[in-house]
Amino acid sequence: MENVGVTMVEKAKIFVLEAGKVIMVISLLIWFLSSYGPSKRMHTVTEKYEHAKTALIAAVPVNSTAIEDLDREYGTEKLENSYAGILGKSIEPVIRPLGYDWKIGIALITSFAAREVFVGTMATLYSVDENNTATLQEKMENAKRSDGSKVYTLATAMSLIIFYVLAMQCMSTLAVVKRETKSWKWPMIQLAYMTALAYVCSWITFLLLR
Image 1 (cartoon, helix red, strand yellow):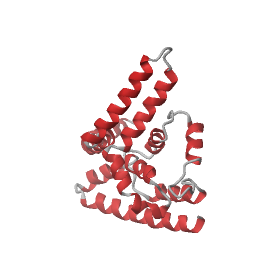
Image 2 (image 1 turned 135 degrees about the vertical axis):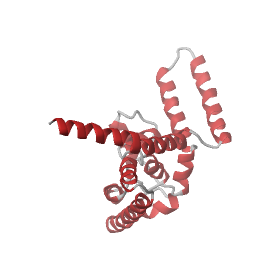
Image 3 (image 1 turned 120 degrees about the vertical axis):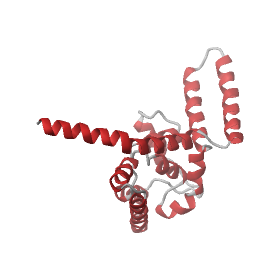
Image 4 (image 1 turned 60 degrees about the vertical axis):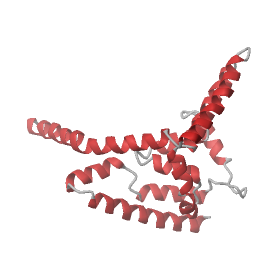
């Protein structure tokens, strides 16, 4: 038992000191992309919501619910205009054949930190309380594309599930592979081929079910 304990401590120490560095760097990068954007865009969004919030606070009586809604809308528009949002919109033509829109594109980028981040990102994008899954579900069910068709259909849902089953959406795994191989070569190969496999299988799934 003592040997097991020592081995566990040593392995945990190696993970924290070596793989942990890579995880921290990627986490900071995703946080930066999600929190910041072109200064002009972000300033315009901030100024717009500051004026709106000032007006709500000045009102008598103060409508706390309206202020909370405004804060959620601000978070949504801020994320939309962040570098992550811009990336999400720029990859939309690539992910459209899978049945995804730009909002799903943003979630795919942010969920590289961890798959469960997808839900939180969608809650932010649809301006709902992250814990209110019923409201999020309703908003996603009512989401429409520019042509009026629904975004979230059975085909889109199954395509997304297949993508997450096969894609390398886990920076911790990549960090461990990098630590074990002592090179970025194999983690990048792993990321590329698993993403390509996920894309092709998701595309086929969407085509079969749409």
